[in-house]
Length: 241
Image (cartoon, rainbow, N blue to C red; front, side, top):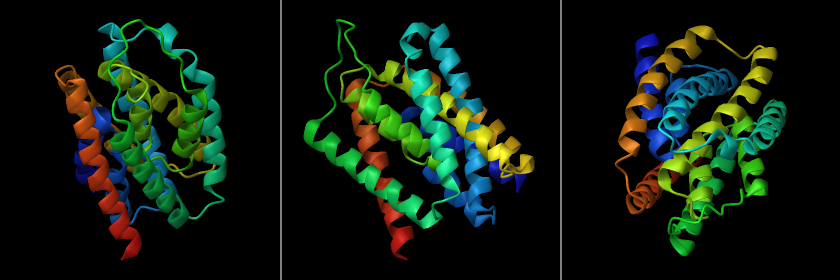
């Protein structure tokens, strides 16, 4: 089982770094392996801490983003991640999957109607704090699809693709760190699940973050839309069957 978790973690981080929603691949695999839902969520949080921090550090060193640009995200992601994790034990897994389904449909519709905005060149970018807080709360609560929602949010406000990836990775790291601390204190962490999944995610994130430099803003929009559409079908079929 550990080998399958490692391979799944690698695929999840590879897809998740480029377009988000890797969790909608990883969660079904862990559930099919018989891993309880809250243990699966905790393992996903731990792997995201490892993979998102490693890809963010790479982009930070490559000067695609500055730490000053990321600082306003810290209180938003911390608060949302902790709040969502506390709510997780009070909401059934079926409700969480319906949330993921509707959030992804909304993001796809907004993208198709509004479109990915041209990249800003004047550096004037105000973080959409309300949207980011809502997404971080959802991340702490459940998570699958949250990175895609973050990427849509930044790209539709005119941020570059690489900076979008960097800010998304940073916010994912902070909110997952906050949420994981709650799952850990509640006894939902199984290290035999979390560690191999995280090791695979570390490798997947490092490969994908290097590919991201070759992706144009137009290609990023197409990639997000295609992956989101496939994931909507996947979640929708699971909910209906």
